[in-house]
Length: 114
Length: 114
Image: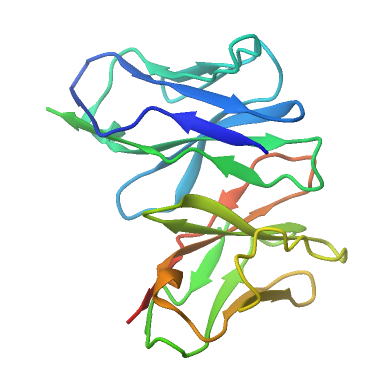
């Protein structure tokens, strides 16, 4: 079945540091890939997405590139802010399946200190 | 516009009782999903509704769990004879159509079974 593996947290960084959160996936079909973010006390929000190989999703300074050859979708940001502190989830949706359910990684807690 | 809403936001119940959790999707969204977020299992898909089609119940963990969607809009997730392992945050998401991969999540219902 489909699965997503992302780096274990927590990750603690200082403001303006570079962020990478690794994500790899296994899928039977050709999935779409997502990063969702959950800020403290809030619901899940879509951060960015990519629907085919070599696509780069980007939003709010975050980027991730769909790498089919390495089955990866690593999240990066060049300069994090305190307001980026949240839990980040990598997810896939297998469009070859009977629905478009999301399969999530276990989440990575990011804390950014001033 | 209004996002996905869920009620109640918190529910504490005694083991063995039945509970009902409600989801109001974004108006016009034909697809509706229920997920469960727990410490041990992360985010798991439970059930999917699309229009008037039969729901995909493949993620429901036991026959104590059921869900319905009335009039293609509001959905209710029912857990019968609750167990302590049912304690989790139950998330609802909706999307415009199955070909739109962006799922919009509600704030969740935190269920605690004592």
